[in-house]
Length: 172
Image (cartoon, rainbow, N blue to C red; front, side):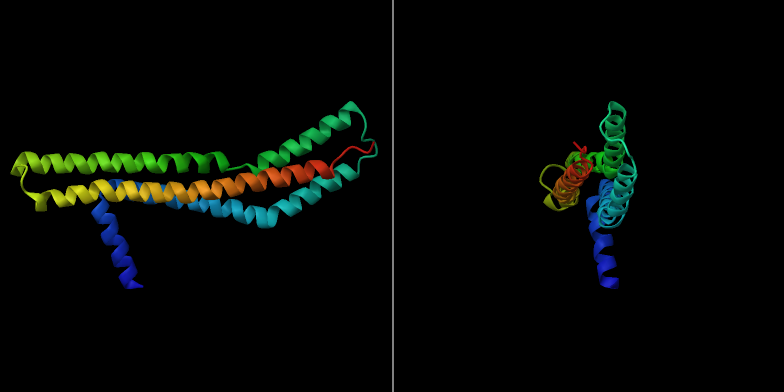
């Protein structure tokens, strides 16, 4: 366990300060993704049952007012199911941008070394090159993992909302 912590610390140091920001963004993104996955495993069933119970208690289901109430119930469910998904999408989009920022700051370090020691000192440029490439890789890995799960979450929201809408069909 101690070796893993040391390896992670060394990796974060090699990538520079931007890598710490990327790690924080990825951590926050994954916490929100895990929250949504847990929500769909537990709370959605209860919410759908409550909405269906509320709808089934209504005696009259064919008027304009009852149709508006049905649409309101579906809309409230959609709002609840889509909570945090826009934030997750924003964090996914932010990952590669932060990776690019890490690339720029690492290359600035390379150019500083070149200005001080001349263009032939490869050893002194290696640190800047690693600070340029590691954040880029980390940002892309974070974004790819987030894109995959955001797609799954969007499909789940659509599926659950369609199922609810079908179950609240008008009695005609």
